[in-house]
Amino acid sequence: MKAAVVGEKGLEIRDVPRPEPKANEVLVRVRAAGLNRAELAVAAGHRHGTVGGAGTVVGLEWSGEVAAVGAEVKGVKPGDRVMCSGSGGYAEYAVCDWGRVSPIPANNMTFPQAATLPVALQTMHDALVSNGRLKSGESVLIQGASSGVGLMGLQIAKLKGARLVIGTSTSAERRARLKEFGADLALDSRDAAWPDEVAKATGGKGVDLIIDQISASVANQNMKAAAILGRIVNVGRLGGMKAEFDFDLHALKRIDYIGVTFRTRSLDEVRAIVRRMREDLWDAIEAGKLHLPIDRTFPLEEAAAAQAHMRANAHFGKIVLTI
Image (tube, rainbow, N blue to C red; front, side, top):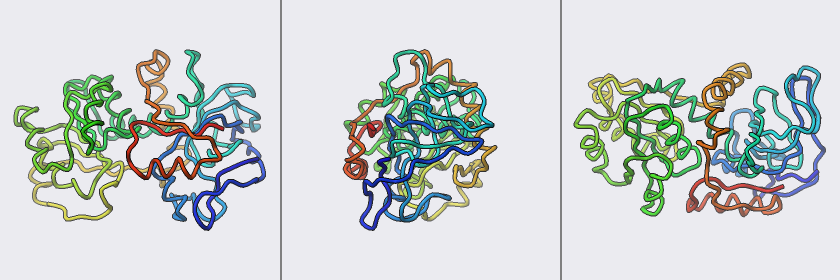
């Protein structure tokens, strides 16, 4: 089968053996794969949890048709249209654990549309609801809101009853579009005064919950913008891995600062994340209330160009490979 694998100079399209599903796995004929920033590091030769190294097939989410299932798999059968998360999605076939497989709704959703959803849904439901403990009537700020994951965060926050939803982006053009996805206020995270704007919008209280995809460069500003007893969930580190941290401000605000990642979670933990997300959000998915824009599609053969487009940071929403 054709696949995009890690080579000496980045992604290379090669013929590789088709994977065989284990007892707990589902084999999918991939039709589309969504791009994610973690894949840029893998393609550059770095590891992402247990994934990485020369010859690695890249790709964390995909959609397609079930080709075969392992002996322990229930509720999924060959021919089903599904969306999945795992590893190895930039390929004609990919396998994943049955607990990371979700049905594509029968609402005319296309394979490219379905391929945009698994990582964003799982990441943001886990961050906002499970770890962020979002309650109806609270205020929420999403750092890096114009990414696919960020746009999904805005929508989930609004769906779960957030009173005020704030999103940040460094692009004026992208900030102008955040309201389409639930943002009541859009701010520039490079503007040193953005925490003051949060204070004004919240009547001086500060924001109840911050979902942070930037981290280092905005860590202290986040705490300034947070309410007393606010929560900050560290999802991504686009602004850097390390920075000065105002421990006194953290203590004064009595902030819960929570780190999350899928890289150190067990299979059972990931299954639980997917199950909780589906129990909570699937009616909204089937009703078309949660969706992501596709910025651009590329054929599998142009996977390196697709990643270059992501690296340029000029996209809005998701980039998708069609296979």
